[in-house]
Image (cartoon, rainbow, N blue to C red; front, top):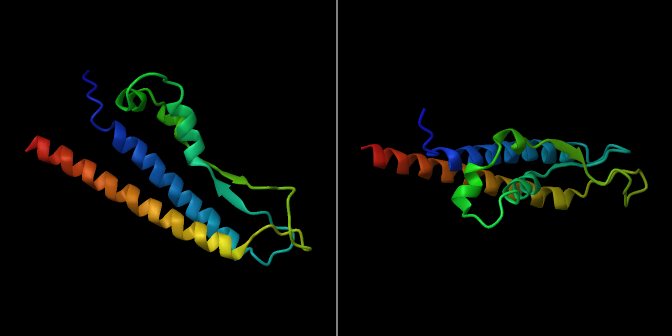
Length: 129
């Protein structure tokens, strides 16, 4: 069996896009619960997981680091952020303006990841022709 690694970057970009989609869902949920007493905001940290996975291979090229990534380890999940912290009297820790800014940021990231995947597929297609 040949392992070319042709889709290694696409696989990582795909995991990043999935995490961005999940983060958008969490942020939208935060915005929807902005007035719910006791609600604690939720978030997703894919970047930290990716950094940890890339850090496992030291002193090698980025290509080799990407090849050594275990895709099963790149599954991002939603976590409750600052569960004990609240600056409001109703114990809700959602800042609507911050959530709107985070939502705009994650949408830009998602679109960039999708664009990067499209370009990677175009490169592969041009090589096959």
